Image (cartoon, rainbow, N blue to C red; front, side, top):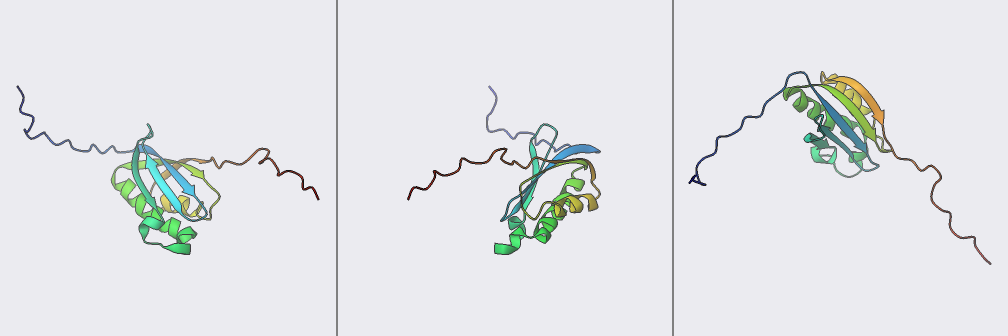
Length: 131
């Protein structure tokens, strides 16, 4: 019988060099979220403007999104990620600043895609007013 309280061997994280990942940038009107995943879609790193100390109306600025993605880009580069496919979603102001910041961290951008949803025909209008 195996002792269930025996120490398990700790597994080391394997860092891949030249690794490719996906960066999902969600720019809302109030905040900007950046999520880096591997090729299978497993989340590796994430950051947001609000998580980096910006509060209130400053969260929605492009500068807040840029500083959040700079910190995230440095962490991604340290983990061995060298190429990114960037997927942008949302109508917020912090859409382009994170892309430039990730590129300035030494990450090569291989794909840039916009998946912002927009209505094809819009919502149904309200009933006509009767007077």
